[in-house]
Length: 269
View 1 (cartoon, rainbow, N blue to C red):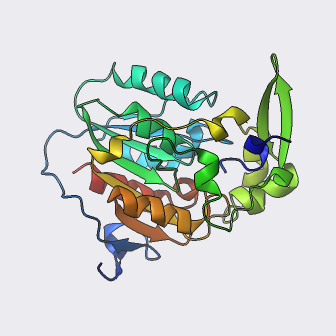
View 2 (tube, rainbow, N blue to C red; view 1 turned 120 degrees about the vertical axis):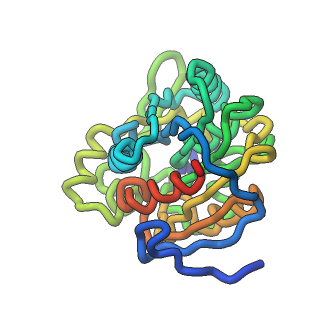
């Protein structure tokens, strides 16, 4: 088995933010980015990661739309870091006005690359997502700290095309690894419709990161079994992100859509 198949996509005190995030379990930590004034409501672009699709954002999108935000949740091809980032960048180029990009999991590396050089992107929001620096890989970040249960043994590998391979989470691991705080019946439906990622994405290096010039926000899932919370905190701190935490699994946007939507609205101010 190749190295790139050994894992998959896998100072101030904290203050309770309760009403601010509509989630009593969430906590806020001070980042080093400044806020922005109010103005035209930006278009919110919701980017999914591997093993899911855009429907995972439905609970967040419905709240944002209700509050008057333009929302788009485009498909993420999950074929490769460079190609997926270029695909999203092309979509962003068709959108006018200010933009807020919101990413889950693997979607984080995609927005980190796709937003670079786009002056319309005013904020990046990462939800249990990868926030790489230039040259870093998904596998390197996922294994930087212990705790991920998304190991090679938790995956099914299915070849396609000429020597290409997709990775899927196994049925008996999906609930506990990916969505432990969702009902098992919901997780079973998610498993049945999961979208795999090409395993080549694991070792593909990221490009120049947009978070160096664009303010960022981060929602850490304390109970994440895919991307260790320690890794999430490390990436958020390095990016200078306004960081919040919640007692949730890897799919925070599904398990706690109100808290996630509230964080997006903070970033969109």
